[in-house]
Length: 333
Ligand code: TRP
Image 1: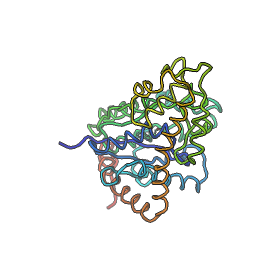
Image 2 (image 1 turned 45 degrees about the vertical axis):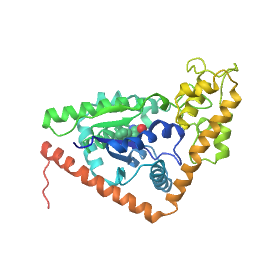
Image 3 (image 1 turned 180 degrees about the vertical axis):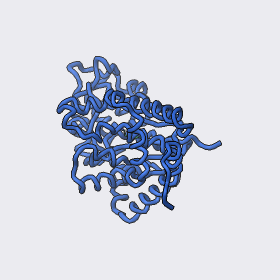
Image 4 (image 1 turned 90 degrees about the horizontal axis):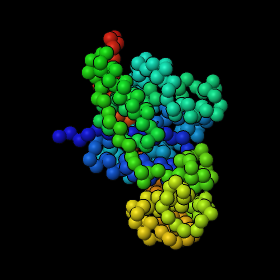
């Protein structure tokens, strides 16, 4: 039997992935490539929905790709590619935009969150239609499942709705994918404000994998805890300490219960030291491997080109089927 097809994407919006990306998503991507026909995509078209410097953008795409390799994505087993290398993403995105109701798009909470502060008026139309591009990413590959975090659930629902709508209106064309929500251990919070998810946009509470080890250790050791003294896993009343337990568990491949057994009842200091050491032990070799890939630009280019070809081959038949179903014909060739 064919292995299930899965697809996921990550934005190249920072100079380094952080431990939330890594423990929450990338590690799962790596283990999923064994039993699935995995497509992983650096979504650089999504990154241009907000203005940025082209030079920086180009570099971030390469660094992101190198980090995915460093995390253990194996280009022999999985298809690892850059979104803008496959024109069909943009082409199918337009189709998806034409299928999406204006009201439907207006209900997307990620857009509302992202524009909450400055108002939607200054956002680009691309940011507004971002979910339609994401739908295209997924449907083009006829993915059976999409490993994503909880925050992407609504986009996945839209994907299913649009796939069903298209199939119903124009004939069976797309696989309707299942969400594959990566759970729990995954949820890494901001070290300075453990009521929020760890995010690159708040660097003070965010541990970047490519940061120098000293800086990583320092951030973990100065994590906000609470005014009590005893280690206990209690995410509601002790979010900071619980976050450190989660991080230590993730970084040492243990369950939170196992880690709590060792550190529970103790003081905060030793827990922080252990978390710092464990994260550095993951991050340091990861950064080393990333630098290795970046040090050989020709080989990186070759891998990116190979991924692009494989992805185009997989995507093209779906685009053609969708165009044909819509009555869009090719008049050349
Ligand atoms: N929107 C996703 C995020 O912010 C990234 C993404 C883009 C994605 N295209 C995708 C995830 C396709 C899964 C599948 O995390």
